[in-house]
Image (cartoon, rainbow, N blue to C red):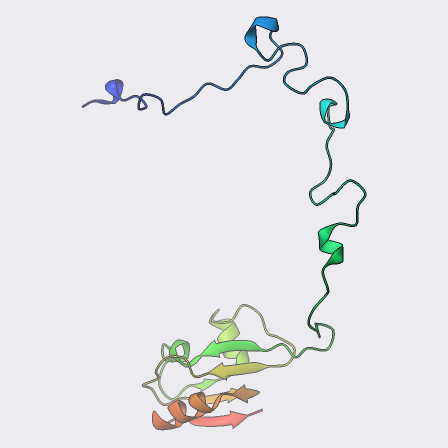
Length: 148
């Protein structure tokens, strides 16, 4: 087989219908849009979710839940397994993790350490919050925890 003999499988490529090309084409004159009305015009039609003036379903449904985005506490989050790639006996804080590009940005409420994964090196971790499993695993590996 060479590159000159390659071609698409039979029936895999269908030519698009050319509309507005005479009566005999089957899609001439109005191009399959019908006579008059909103959908026959260029740029016609309605926006998604429009139900002809009836109250749309999206507005009928109840708004559920509570969003505390104005006062929510946002933390930079890091897992124990990510900290394991650092050198032993390192003092780990949010600034160091940001410099190493482990966290994307320094969040206003500080750093939270989660206990996902395993840690084998002793590290001194300085953070705002720790999960219980993170505390256990860091201390088991011989490290220290400092709550800022």
